[in-house]
Image (cartoon, rainbow, N blue to C red; front, side):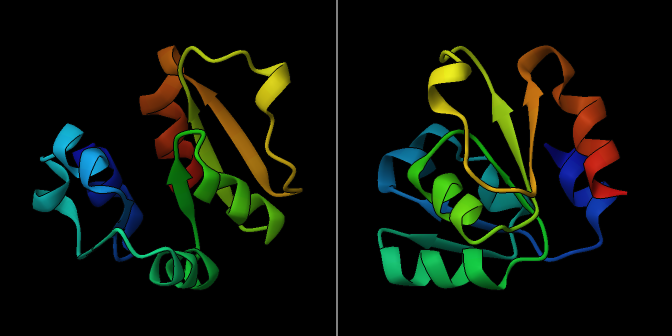
Length: 106
């Protein structure tokens, strides 16, 4: 995920729960700001973001509802069942993440 830092030119924020951070400790190395456990602050980060890269989470659905420019990294959940409602939502399947992240950040 250094690809995100190397290709974005934008500040990188990470938001989620304590368990999200424990699962992704490497985020501390690439993030400019980390917001854990505060939904209001997390939503304000989503609101102010130019681009969002996320997995399929509640915050991704909030970003979709705000029609934010978002790339959802899709892994194994059924796609049809869980699509994001946003008109600016793009999806990347797990085998294509690296190239599609680079393309999204251009």
